[in-house]
Amino acid sequence: MVEPRVYQALAQPVVGHLDPYFFEVVGEVRRLLRVAFGTANEFTLAISGTGSSGMETAIGNFVEPDSKFAVFANGYFCDRLTEMGKRQGAQVVRLEKPWGETFTYEEAAEFLKRERPQTAAFVHAETSTGALQDPAAICKAAREVDALIIADTVTSLGGVPVNVDQHGIDVAYSCTQKGLSCPPGLAPFTASPRALERLNARKTAVREWYLDLKLLMEYYDGRKYHHTASSTLFYGLCEGLRLIEEEGLEKRFERHVKNHHALVRGLGQLGLEMHVAEGRRIPTLNTPRLPQGADDVKIRKHLLDRHGIEIAGGFGPLAGRILRIGLMGPLSTESCVQMFLGALQEAIDR
Ligand SMILES: Cc1ncc(COP(=O)(O)O)c(C=O)c1O
Image 1 (cartoon, rainbow, N blue to C red):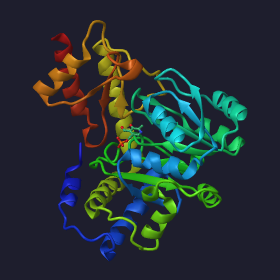
Image 2: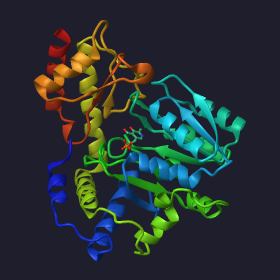
Image 3: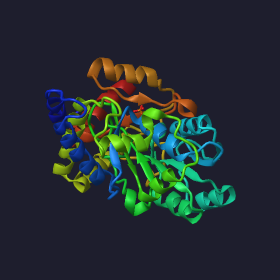
């Protein structure tokens, strides 16, 4: 759900992409994104495009042709990372786990010591499964072999702690339409000084002109035209981030966890088991297994038609086996949880 105050911000007058006021808003967005990411990285900004543009920026700038790129693969978005790495001409190696599981430090260390990649990537909150990866496990292993580490925080930013600096994540990207409660269209992005050193040492030009970080730096720092960024989307993101700052990150995370627990308890009372083991679940994206004989398409249609509630089903190996229930931002409240559980009970009974 988009925050009502974000809708108001989106209605403000459009200014040009080189207008001093635009850069004022960009400056505030960059400051607030540092808070949300938990980083002091100077190079923190929002890329024009959805979460996938953030992913492509990370791969396009930090995975060079002919280099080795390691992917921790336990869901759909790891496959997208793999595909983008291949398209850069990198040698992609994968450590595979079933959808819904996560990686330990020992597993990550063994894999990375064996493969010695220049860059490695993982998905912090895997939207296709509901599993939350502990960044510390992978980042520690990556440091030991001097691999640059990319984290997909598309479903985690603003919803659960990301703590870029504390974990030593080099590059992280996200989206605006999930934990930040804004419309889609921008991809928050941050890169550490170590990542920028690597970028400066590249032997080949970045293939994606539009997503070339050095050119983007000349735009956002040097105020030199690169592309016509949307002031509207920046107004919306700025307001969404202000709301998060006002609530306080810690309080927001606690609220998400509290309502997640209430939802999981209620699902248990309906006889639904969670797909992901306790302690590794994303509080903002809940994935119960479907009861025996239940048809997820019919359940979701009933929820949408009768109650105006949209949830998602599983796909890939989890097609027809789980539901994916977003509980984030303004929707993460006790009353929403109770209303949803009542509607779900009715849908399952039908
Ligand atoms: C974990 C993850 N990565 C990347 C993406 C791609 O983001 P977008 O659809 O905004 O391009 C998504 C989208 O849901 C996602 O969940």
